[in-house]
Image (cartoon, rainbow, N blue to C red):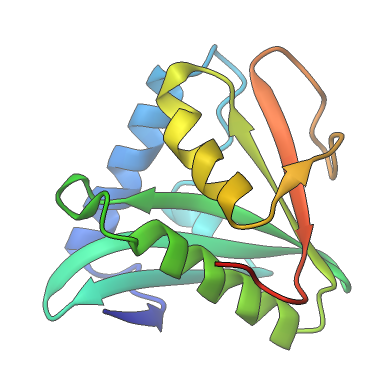
Length: 156
């Protein structure tokens, strides 16, 4: 597997990002899904990564700089055919390493609370994330949860 920065012009990446956005919105109450669309992923301060096995797209994820020392993991999604193969963990560790290399001391994320998000939450907890309060512009609700971890000593 190789992880590359970019790929948003690739139709396969665009389709996976659109699927991620649709599924997140379907699993979350109106107004509480914060998955970024293509324009959001192209915004300044966002670094987008795609994971590949030869020509097969395995997953996507992004890193958003919130502050000089704080980043946010955004738009993590593993293609259905690549699930249960460690793609999400590898992509997440890559994003954490990129945040560390960029001088960020910690990364945080917001995710949903419905059953759809259970596997993602298990991945985040296994990779050293712990619950935290809202950060950035987020507000706490029954529809979301917040996790954070230092970028040092990536686990897994």
